[in-house]
Amino acid sequence: MEGERTRILEMLKEGRITVEQAGELLNAVEESHRGEARGGAEQEGSEAGPHHPRSVNWGQFGRSLAEQVQRHVVGRLAGRFGGSQAVGDPARENFTTAKLSQHLLERMGDGTSYANFGHLIVRDDVPEDLLERKIGSFANYGTVSGPGNLIAILEDKCEDNYGTFSDSAEEGDDWPHGPRAPRPPKPPRPPKPPRRPFAQRRRQRGEEAALTSYSVEDDRIGMEITCHTGNLELAGTEDKTFRLIVRKPVREGESLPDGWEKEVPWSADQEDGQHRFTLGDPDNPDATKDLTFRFEIPCEAEISAHTEGGYIAASSLTGELVLKTDGGDISVSEIGGSVKAETGGGDISVSKVEGEVRADTAGGNISVGGVEGEATLTSGGGDISVSDVEGATTAKTGGGNVSASDVEGELTVESGGGDISVSDAEGAVAAKTGGGNISISDVEGDVLAAEAGGGSISIADISGSVTAKSAGGHIAVADVRGELTIDASGGSTSISNVSGPVHMGG
Image (cartoon, rainbow, N blue to C red; front, side, top):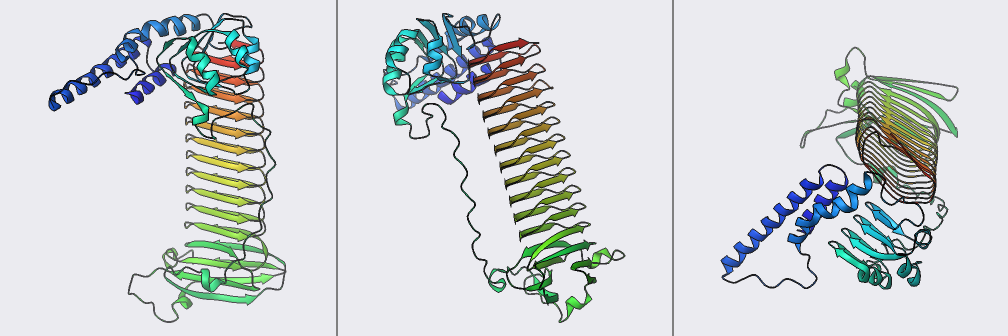
């Protein structure tokens, strides 16, 4: 019952159902559970036991929901927005996740009537006498959490309770106490562990053979690789030997004839520290389509690699990488330089890169994490996921979803129609979608959120200013320390805990 009630209230707050529909749904849920209870009692041959003294009267909740919400929500939203009244206004409401702080209470008038429909968090820095004086009456239709002594005050003042009160001391260390502490500096990256010898770490996947092997005395080389068909693997090594290995898959119990690698078409040349390789035969692509070419590189290398159809995997390298495949996936990890990855339609995965990252796919997904430089990510229609980036980040997709977290620089995210989710960003955030929903939280800088197709916008815990524009969807804003500008274009709004001036348009 509790989960069903929560889902119905969420649909009501998001504007997906009307007040009357919510009341009908809750009544239907109540009747369904009554029927189950009656059936169980008849089957056991006994009557249902008495109600728990603290249980909710679901029948009363269902019958009074339309009246209560009409009185507390619809009437107020018709002429103003919840949670953003001027100082001294005798009534306030919360419809999202809000934090009741000492600063907010001091801005309220004495004896304020407060109605909570979302999640209200009472901070532990609130004095008891201030809470007692500022809150005259309290109505709870959602969840209220905070220190037990403060929760007890609100419970005493609660005239209508169809939600829950919880003591934060019983919820563990995850409950947010007081103002957010300054973000600590990131610890230095630990040194890479010593790599195991090649013979120990090589995984047998089919039969392997060395096409070439030679010593490299240079500290830095350049490489150009053209692979007409087949897969590419690029890996750093710690000895001074450069190797090109070819691997061919075989069935269990099958063996290849001796010298099979001599039939593999390839060529190479060296000049002034530049190593050039051509793998496969453009006139006979089937000759190498199932082969994997692995380069083991013993020094810093600037690498440009292109394959016409296979995947590319690169790891444990130092230097600049430029990787391109006409349709396969690209996987990159532990790179001590910049990375540029491009595929005609495959997925791109990048992790632990010390330089800049540029990733472009015509339609696949992009996943990026652990980047010390800037990140520029573009997909024709796939999803983009990015986290732990120290530089500025741009993520754009023609229609997929975008999720971003733990970004220290400025963040720009765009989607032609997918959802956007942003959390834990230190710089300014600009988010735009042509039809999905936008969710933004825990941002140190300014926020610009624009939704063109009618989806919802949810913004919370922002240190800077906020500008939110929606073509018709619901806009919910909570805990903004700066200025707030909203253009709802006919959609509904809910606002709470805004410290700066509020401007409404649309």
